[in-house]
Length: 210
Image (cartoon, rainbow, N blue to C red; front, top):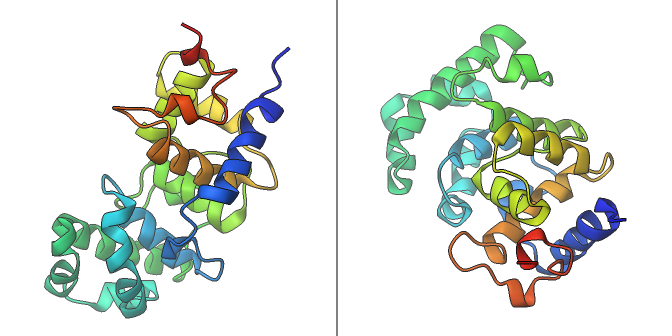
């Protein structure tokens, strides 16, 4: 009988330890909850590679909700314009203002409060909780959905995949598992040309059986 922990989670974590994108600045262990939230908002519908170069100076300039809420929208727009994220400037200012008004400047640690922030959807809220609190859940984007639907041979329904992802997420390494899924989907189980021949978990993969 197939054991998802031994057949999927463990090999994926092992692959990530060797090949994961460990140099992404928002994954550094000393990042504050607000710096993590900043990264998640900037990463929406944008590649990690595109955000990586701009993230450090952006987080250094706006390290707290107060600093970004007080900044002119035009100033923020100028910094994110090269990423094609001009609309994100207004999102970030409004989100920061809400954190100040509703939570005394602290990033919420409850799902219901996070998803009420402007510009924060289900994926962003879950990812923040994983990285800030260590909660044993997963966050499903297009890449994670593709990976799990292929491997387990299930329909790519987001709700069904979300339940599966949460069940797979290890309670003590949810952050590592989230990074592993994202990086594996970006490097191996890609949308167009998946590297099935070199996939370390290809033997039990449902997509490799046909």
